[in-house]
Length: 304
Image 1 (tube, rainbow, N blue to C red):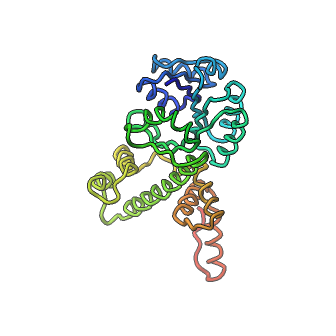
Image 2: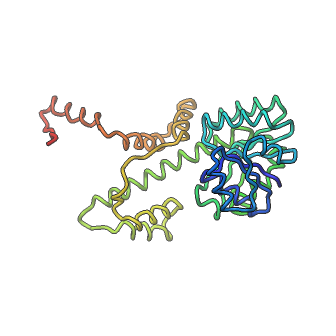
Image 3: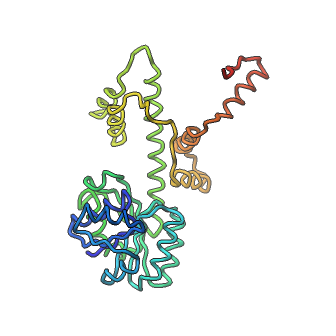
């Protein structure tokens, strides 16, 4: 198939290369000329174009265009610009980590022009190029069926890693929950290893433990594989600042839990822990110490 790829960052570029390896004719665009040149030097089989207009002109209708730019305004602007160069019967595959409600709104807008939209939640990170991606896809059954060769080529195998999970919006909703679960899993690993790190009595080799847990253990996972690699490279993680970012999906999942009145304490606390990691002032903990001193005369550790 002919496929247009917009956004050639870590995910988009690797997806373009994987599609090209699977005999798709890929036309790729990024607004940054250096990024376009970088992909061209890494993959001669991909056709690089210099504008969205050139991308649309290069593809035969019905056109299939994958959008892999950051969520929010970049995705909003890109899809708005695409609506000016695409035509009835074309299909936009929104692959960034968008809020599912935004995907549904954009799809409804494109529908007025006869352009179909598919929202694809995509997991796999930088490893997806060689190992394949997990794709959670939402959209019109006919459009998804025609685009299926694209998804099958990106997936780990032809028969695994791809699912049409429902109507437009269902793909990114599912990916939102996926990422919130990821938050909880990562937090559990982090807390467990912090406990072991603090137990001076045993002088535990955390890299060794992570490695042994990878084999036969009920808590083995790809995240544990990555943990073992990180600890092997730097056992005390001394060069890393304890500052953890969060993406929108974790916050959106918590908002969804409030709307649905479904308790999600693990997901919520994992998100809150990331917020706490960035609080250099730790004002709340200072206030806790002050209150204990006020009501009970408990000692306070003063800065020297």
